[in-house]
Image (cartoon, rainbow, N blue to C red; front, side):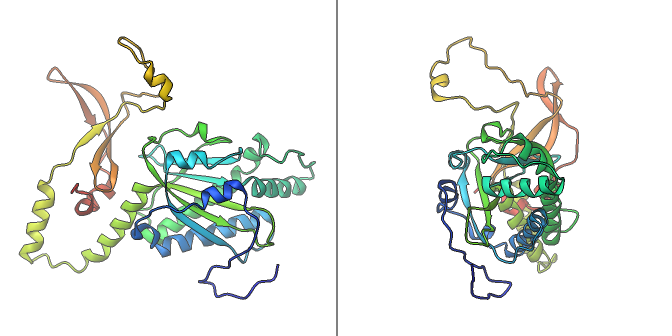
Length: 327
């Protein structure tokens, strides 16, 4: 469909019929300006994503629109009224660090392109299945590599999150490793450049993690302007270091229905199949939410239960101390 020519920095708005899923994902949400205004990060992610999806479709994608916003995990789960392809990313410190998902129509288009290139017959199903999940895994891996480059361009090679593919599934019921009360940040890129269909790709991150990245970035810029000989700087550093942070070491978290919880009784056993006593995460309650400090192992010290740290403190936690202190 013809459209007015725009500069590279502007979004091209495309008129197309939106599905129920698309409308739910575009719902308004409240987001701090710090996360939304990381224009350099979102610009890099958009560039890398359009390049990868364009290669998968076999054509250049020159126009796209994006939406972004904060949303609760519960609302995010209810936004999907059909199965589609999900790719669950993590890091060495985080079980859940990001989620990549394709709209059913986009997944179908890329799968058809892949099968046609291999000389195989195209499937009849309109809803993505295990075949789509398998065939699109290389595309997801390319997107992960692109996201690494995007974070590196903004944060530098030492501080970028080392994203890795942990799991892939067709339903959000299989999403593990994130507490139900956490907020997410959605970045959705609509590439329906022909004006038809509902072709989009979504990226989802823990909101607290992105807020921390935003604060760390601001601190790096401000650090160069601080005078180490200024007594006020020393006073503030001392105040930060003496502030109290509540710590928690959680064995496991799980989801249960209200009906199941209402039937709890004395001596009831709740199974924790994912617990590893030799690899527990120490978390701190901060203004930006729960942040990981280090990994630890459960044991006994002087007749008391205790944990022993078995790796260095998270470097982002150290760098971001002034902004993480609970008010």
